[in-house]
Image (spheres, rainbow, N blue to C red):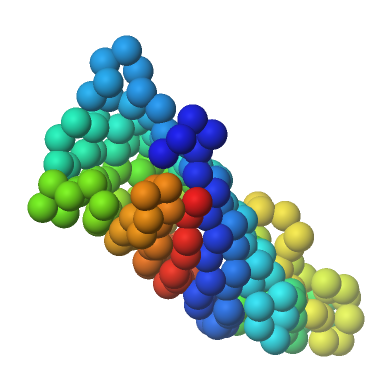
Length: 219
């Protein structure tokens, strides 16, 4: 990797909550060493367009440390954030709740609205290995976990005979998430350009689920 880092382009398929999308994206990765060259750091960012019946987008950032850079297996520890917004905001009909005198006291509804946005942020820990100590081929895997921010349902026009319920425009509800991702990469020429294959799955216990697979090229 040169001093300028590496730029990558990718394509693949993604799933956000209950909807499937095609995915095209770009990324940037920069890696450097500390005074002890066996320890270094990695900074990366990516942005993707999600293509389906409705358009969407996603992006992420990562900042972390790398240990054992001179060994066949390196270990990584860092902070990550992943934001996705996809699909139109859906709405469902609610039902008025009234007391014995007929006064409206609330609205009941089924909390099965599809999510249209999610922000996941937390800790990422993993490893990467030069296969057979071959610098041209590398496999990496990491686990992630932390907090997920998503939109809670809101009642629109609660005094109407049939109130409408849709998700807020704000990320005003929080839950936990966990996930994993994997990558295989191989250098294809003497300039250090590489082809890579990726897979990722993130699951929120109260929010969204999402996943993706893809193939890309870094130069």
